Amino acid sequence: MKKVSLRLGVVVVLSLMALWLAGCASAPKEEIDATRAAVTAAQTDDVRTYAPESVSEAEGTLNKAMAEIQTQDDKFALSRDYKAASDLLKQAKDQAAKAAADAAANKAKVKAEAEALIAGLTPTIDEAKKALATAPKGKDTKAELEAMQNDLKSAEESSAAATQAMSQEKYQDALGQAKTAKEKADAIIEQVKAAKEKIRGRK
Image 1 (cartoon, helix red, strand yellow):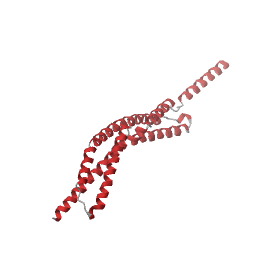
Image 2 (cartoon, helix red, strand yellow; image 1 turned 120 degrees about the vertical axis):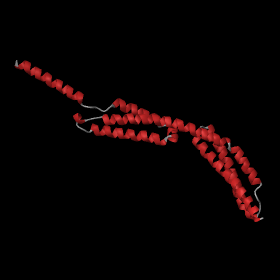
Image 3 (tube, one colour; image 1 turned 120 degrees about the horizontal axis):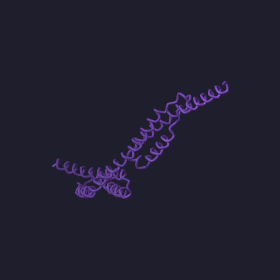
Image 4 (cartoon, rainbow, N blue to C red; image 1 turned 60 degrees about the vertical axis):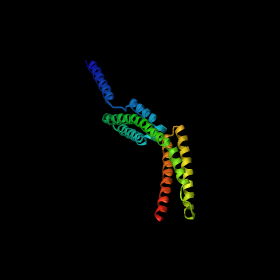
């Protein structure tokens, strides 16, 4: 009887140990791998260019999740709880998907804006050329005319650079160059207009 009771006791102890070990929480490896893969997939040049804040947010949340996992790993087995880490991992994964979506939307928006601006550059620069050709000339306007000539050349170069950037699908660069070209051309038109009005005022 004693042997039977001893055996039963051993079985019970082993069963309890198995249940205890099963109850010890372990790090959600599959979730970690899936989230890391999602964040890595979002770390492209396009996403960093068109949705930098969104991808940084996903990276930050992933780092918080990994820090929480390390905190739980360092605890006694029975007191580990990876729920907060799992929640953070899910959040980071969702943020990575959002970053990719944000980048695609922002890229399309910048492309459309750049296309519209570039389409109007030729007539604006042509207008600046015509204005410059009719600008008042004299000793006191020589320096101003030279500066405007340089600005016109710069506007044409920026316009060409914008067109090239568009062909390379570098829409952010294209938009920046197009804005520079328009600003310089508009400034020439306004400066010539102001110079003419100044002369009329003297008469």
